[in-house]
Image 1 (cartoon, rainbow, N blue to C red):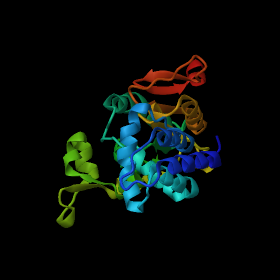
Image 2 (image 1 turned 120 degrees about the horizontal axis):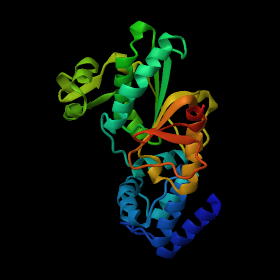
Image 3 (image 1 turned 180 degrees about the horizontal axis):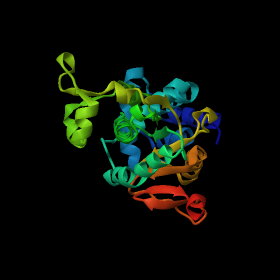
Image 4 (image 1 turned 45 degrees about the vertical axis):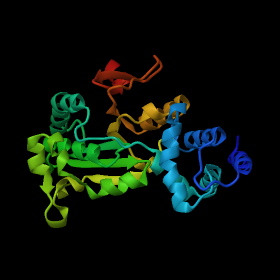
Amino acid sequence: MTARQHAAAARSASASIGVRPVPGLLDAEFRLFQSLVEREAGIQLADTKRALLASRLNQRLRELEMPSFSAYYRRVIDDPNEAIVMLDRLTTNETSFFREPSQFAFLETRVFPRWREDASKGRRPRRIRAWSAGCSTGEEPVSMAMSLLSHFPRSEGFEIEILASDLSTRVLRQARSATFSLDKAVQIPGHHLHRFMRRGIGRQAGRMRASSEVRATLRFERLNLARDLDPRLGIFDLVLCRNVLIYFEPTHKRGALQRLLRVLDPEGLLLLGHSEALQGREQPLRSVGPSVFAWKKLLDD
């Protein structure tokens, strides 16, 4: 069904229910939003998410003084900016510093020492690029920046670049500030905390901010993994896409994975969430660590 057909269905649903001061979400309306979210973001909203969708969008309906979910659906169809707002309201943004600690341990003990040795012998460049796909409020890319800066110091000519992307403009605004609650300090290893985080004072009391050294490595951008990527993104040594693809409909998941692989260096690593796996023998990657994957061809050579 095309967007116009969906909108026509929405108008029909709206006409059948009339105008309600406090709108309830009808079955037909929920199906419209299920299809819309899948088309726009690749995210599969299970039937069990109906109450979640209704509660998260209800406030937006009140803000816009919309009489029904069908009316709001038509607004989203007609206004790309409102589609972004809708996805902001619906996406889940759970994160923490040094999440998946076994992956960081694997990188810091098995991968980074080898990369550093190869760089010293001229076998690999001294520039390391990482992509945090689904960066949420910034804890993941900041964690990776701290880890990389500790192993590849600028004083030895290394250059660290980290792209941090998310579908949600709301969390990206927060991530760009690189400012976090002091309550999260317990998630950061002590040596990283003392070197890379600064305690806030005055109006920033109770907060901490990543150091300028960390912030200089970060670039933030809104990217939709359900859409083709700009080839100007370049190639990455590390691609982190943890606990993101689990929300995707299978077809969109395969498409998103292919987009990630197109920007993964031939000697690079893909990091997924601990509960995620790559299915099928046709996959070009092989597990080399805790939800860490490398190209099969590289391993077979």
